Image (cartoon, protein in one colour):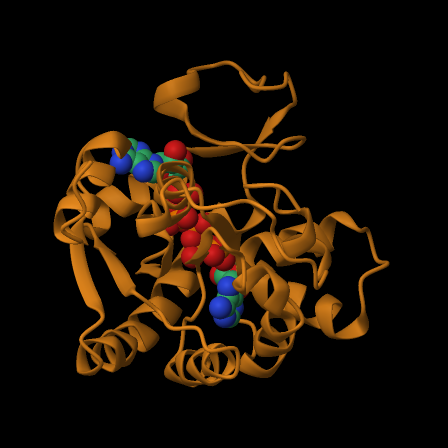
Length: 244
Ligand code: AP5
């Protein structure tokens, strides 16, 4: 698996990344927290490039399973129904998928976990999994943004159906083609208003206990997610006291 090639993560391989961190002093293991649409995936991509770490998203696993058109396992098919409604997938299913991917968590460049953990039970299970491989989290970065701005980001999100690059309508206007590969830009199924409402409710229920969990371990770093993606990246690095 090469750097930022998320195939092993998506397929559930046990492969271990051969890439090295951008600097040996900078191997990072972060979880990224925050509401749907706050910009976790966008920041994970920028941070992955900055640190030479792997960007690992549980939502991506479910979307890849959906693209398999019915050939995914029964447990995954059931998970997709939760996702379609905007509900959280049961912990048991998510944890089994992450545990299968321990090779990716052992990536020498470190990792950025995007969208996992989402509950205290998942956070506890992640700690146990990492401890079993003598690994430790460095930080839980929590992105914060007012609800009206989150909704605007979600409503305008478009994703390339081929390379999965994420855009906002502000960037692409009326264009329906990906700048990266020419693929068709589509709106995510769970970005419809009825699913957004369910996702926000699920987030509100789980967010506070999860933040408290990481705060009690002195790992929580809150970062305002206002402004352009590069400004949020710089704010993240400043909050983590990382200087180039
Ligand atoms: P997942 O894919 O993880 O979705 P999410 O957490 O709802 O987060 P999003 O991907 O919607 O948003 P994001 O914060 O990454 O924002 P993005 O960078 O794209 O999960 C989907 C579903 O899978 C869940 O609902 C659940 O069912 C299931 N699931 C996944 N993990 C699970 C788990 N651990 N447990 C249980 N269930 C799980 O940005 C959004 C938009 O804003 C884009 O258009 C982007 O271009 C734009 N944008 C980003 N940053 C900026 C900025 N700074 N300024 C302006 N625009 C910006």
